[in-house]
Length: 317
Image (cartoon, rainbow, N blue to C red; front, side, top):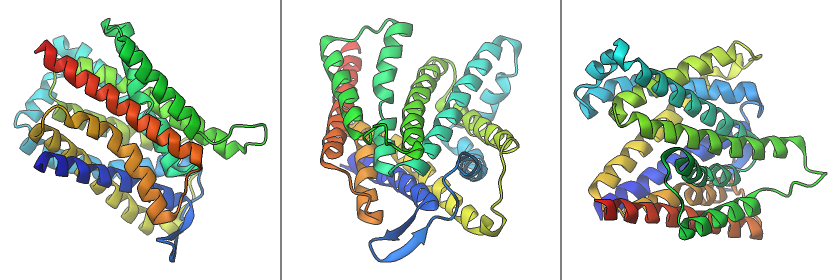
């Protein structure tokens, strides 16, 4: 029961971060009463700025927590400088860059389209991961997995706003960014799986946080940023987003550790559905009927896919 509770709270934290980022870009009536938000324009430059500010807080927090979560973190990182460990360092770097790209695209999507829609479209990544695992690891999908993948892609199609000739450019950019974020995250996941054969997730996460901060900072040199009057509110929002993200991820990990493997299916479906529900409750971003059906299909498909993987892992052991 404790494991389930931790996973549920972790899901709420991550979903709240998605809704918070949406509020930064779009002025909304919070809980239908208080006008709040729209601090910066929903642009590529501002999406990268928020990603960098969040990383500014995430990296120091991770550096402080890393030795407590994994005692040999700094020794593991030092070993990556040895010539024989260079291939692992390169793979860790590429995986971390893929994560940076995924987050940058997701932030752009949250700026352009409703938070629930962006998050559900992003969650095509388990399906993409399953396909990549087949090509890279030879993990051929079963007939059940093909059915589940079809369910996920069908749900994603239903969730996407109507892409007609009259669709505005922001919608097209948002949908494309959300789908691209899912693909990049799937690539990151496959590379991370390879890296975890040789490195613990904690030092790997330190590398990821560092790469995200470096590349988001470099990216800002290539775009025009003018938010001098809003720096304080952006710093506050970024700090809250970093705390929500870190808390959510830690609760997820501890929850899975305390619960049995079946909790993985709950983990898989909780984030997109929680984001859609919170966005509806907090900022009244309602979904159309077909989009609600799409959310249900994606949640069901991802949950079934995760459950199938859990059973497969259990059988192999």
